[in-house]
Length: 283
Image (cartoon, rainbow, N blue to C red; front, side):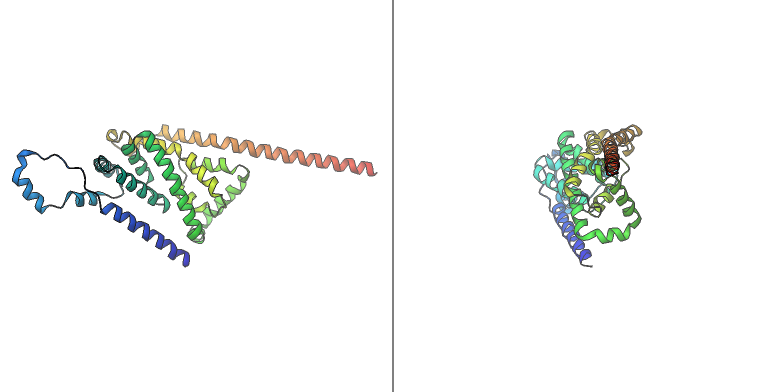
């Protein structure tokens, strides 16, 4: 019960902070007024909500391509005079989603490419993905272990078995899971403390393993205006490339396991040989 109360308190505090950050916007850049609008425009402005209030109402997590393009346009508008605010808002929203395992990080990766360009956007997305996933790891470790095991007993047991089978090459196994395009990253983030995965190993696996996925999303965001559907994001060719990368990540782990097994067999043979020689001498 105490863990549940603590988790609710953390979520409530983070939600309130993000609400304040998105509501109290700094004044946006002033658009040039047209001369022919005159008094009619002024009278309409008195009755209409302010530009800041209208912008605040549009600041929400995008759920489709149309909302994503609107969000990118709005933040680009603010970024001309308030780059620091846009960066703080973007980082806060990204960490919020990652820390509390909320789906939809691909939209924010695309937004990173639209706002900051391909390379700065990729660096930002990789850092935020890793930090956010680590926050999810720590929250699960502090508050959620027993609840996750209770909610997903079979999945946790299956993943625990796979991790133990690959304990000798754990880093490469974790890379494979991150490279694999169908892996539920939110579930991996939450269950890693239960599986006794060291946080440093977890951190590096997330940073490296999600880099290809982040690059695809960020590169898509850099040409957001040309995209007509989100199906363009993950075509079959892109999925096959990610699968190939995931398979390559398994090779070092397979070699390590094979060498370890061979070493054990050799040790066993040597031990048996020595014991037989000793028996002969004793006779």
